[in-house]
Length: 298
Image (cartoon, rainbow, N blue to C red; front, side, top):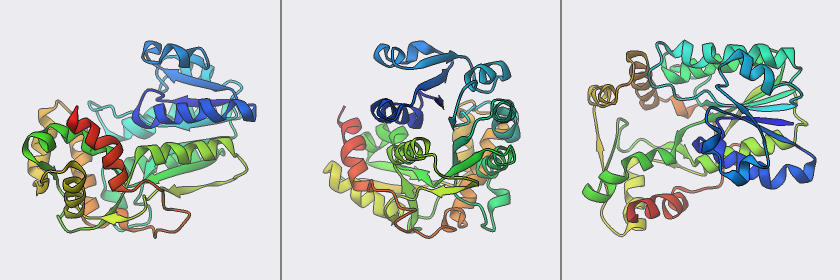
């Protein structure tokens, strides 16, 4: 039995479809925890065991983890959280207790790059995510934290600006090269770990994408794929802060994003070397062809 949290999110939904294809042949049953089962397609609901509620609720995870062998764990975005500790470790604490109570053997969690870098303790959301990983690891389960850089898919939030103005923005230096990953590759990595549970102990699994790119590199690739000029504009952290606050985020969440982006510009994502084991396959050009171009043309 594999339990999937956040099955309607960007990563969880892709993971669910992979497991629906592959798990039955391996004798695995699937269970999902979801606040609104209506967000699952009818065909999916018919093939999984559904536990309704929040996976931050002790009673919900107690029901969901009964008989579970493995769990996919993702702390939800919670834009109005009163603190980052509450959003990550606080949210995860009931599940951590339930892992132990129900003898869950393996957990795969979504986390971030940065552990071991000089900025790991002042990286906002990443710092809180790493603390969440430590909480889970100390329960005694076999745990793998998927250590991710920035998601390519975050650019879909800027489709209107890219389409109408030929501009995308970020806070990092235009020529700073860094890894980026497609969420489909994160889901595929999670699926592999959940289906082959021969691993033991605790650790990280970096998912780095196939290459490091700067914002200027991304602008050039987007221009090629879209057949129109796209350029990068760097915004200040103060401007970034104001934009987040304008979306109604809590002060804690806003500060967490600002601290994370500052840390990224100071080397947060530079601590892991890309190898055949840490690279993931989807190139930024492939991602643009498959996801950005259709969104811009819609």
